[in-house]
Length: 113
Length: 114
Image (cartoon, rainbow over all chains, first blue to last red; front, side):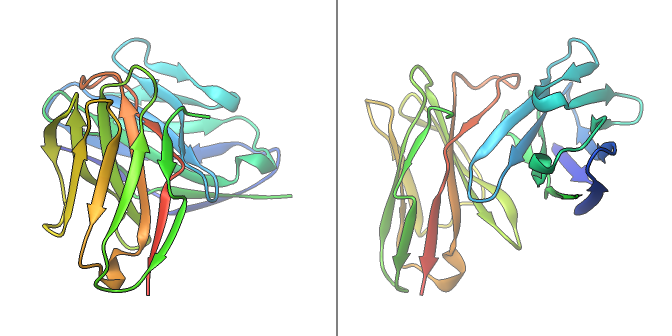
């Protein structure tokens, strides 16, 4: 079985300040983990993925995430938020048990000028 | 642009009606997934096809059905529509079915049932 929990439904930051979006997962197998972003009225775009290589993964637009097995976490970070980062972010787990990706409920990132 | 094409982008229909949503996967991708996104349920997996065969089923209602054709495009059929079926329906594709592959999403079909 696999599941993913995004710990915050909304995160509000000021432009230029750091971003932290939290994700915890549960998996019976070694997981692959992904972060997707969804801008309003758009499809989901892959930000980054972890597939058992380096635990610190760099993605597009300055985002990165660190896989911590001991904490079953895969938090998404960015050093400095930009207005264009305002969107919905989804953490996704995929394991060898089912191969069907399971999505978290999403975190809405709000960026204030 | 993900390379996944979904039509129509918007659809408004009445309760009891039937609609068909269409998806063309990225070139070379054999696997197609359908997801339903609603405010109260989030992104829910409906069904997956791989190279024309049904591979996995999720929370798909009996009123809904899907298929993948020899040219790999897929259709999701929704019948006896209810108000609660109003949602954004996403199609995604991937090369295969392994757990390491990412999904590429279309821009979705927004269904409104009145």
